[in-house]
Length: 174
Image 1 (cartoon, rainbow, N blue to C red):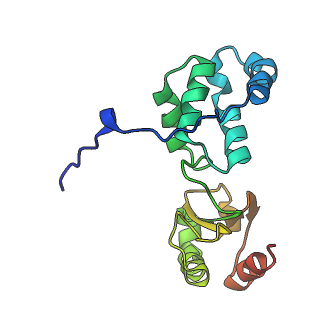
Image 2 (cartoon, helix red, strand yellow):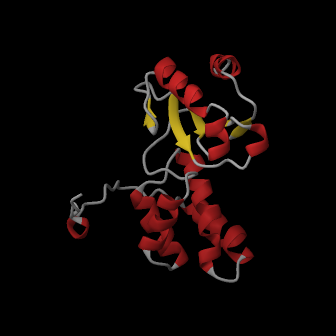
């Protein structure tokens, strides 16, 4: 195994002229979210949730803007975004399908579900369809071992899935 060095110090962050955090968003964060926490770091995840849901991902430029607003290091924001599966650094599809791959779901047949969706949508895990309609995720434990195998579909958990039930859910999406 070889270590590959990334040029982190010279990597250019894609930016746009207008900020991702609008004045209205910042006013809301400052007046409604940040005061709920003893330290500004406590407001990081609620703000990231808002940005993720608003834009369908958390752009790198937005991470810097959030860090500036909260007066924390941008690396802390990136660490949080890269740790939690809720956040993505690339846009996700209109419909996000996350198949649980925990040990309980593995024993109950998650791989057949994942393989079926891969074939049905012609996607690999963590890819988004060219038309932007679907993103497929292979997720860690969703905390529903008693309902294995399970999946998230647009944030809603579905337990006891079969290929037929999963097809029904996917085919019923607009």
